[in-house]
Image (cartoon, rainbow, N blue to C red; front, side, top):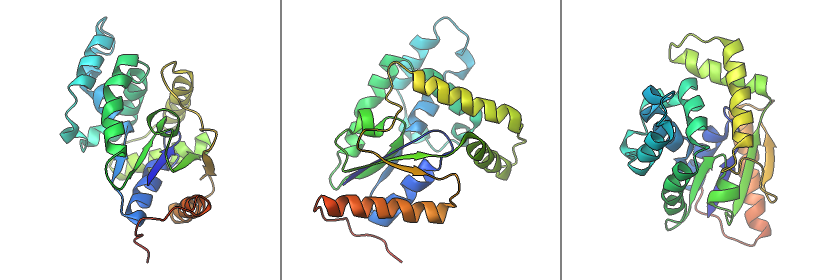
Length: 219
């Protein structure tokens, strides 16, 4: 079973994807970390004329062993990720890695911005997670503050808005709900309620298809 979880930054898609993976006993990939890692690798050359060439090289030689770097979770890394994500060859370099992960025996859960539209259009269940910008800003601010980072909420809000606009306008991307995606707005939901809703969507979608579910880690 392949579950595609898409949505904008701080919508809760990563937490939900991880929760779904635990629930169904599936491996999980945060595909945004791939782009964040590429952006982080070329941060020092952001204004250089060869920025795109360096980003392409970084994507082609990406060491996925470094995806646990805490620097990849910052707002700055997110901004850089959206800049390298508009580069066609970068996306192509990371496409195969994501497809291989999705197609492993038994399936997988992947979260990102174009999983259901580009990476896994054949996914068994597609979810598009959303929340309003203010709620997403506050979630990200609390995450950063929990790590001791001082947050300018005004600046963070505009970073989120700018990234949304850049992602939607990406000519090489697919940041929009797939026609068969299930929309889940988490603005007013805590993580437990959001996960229950997501599990219900997956269970219902698979039941309608007459497909068996993986062994779930049910309480």
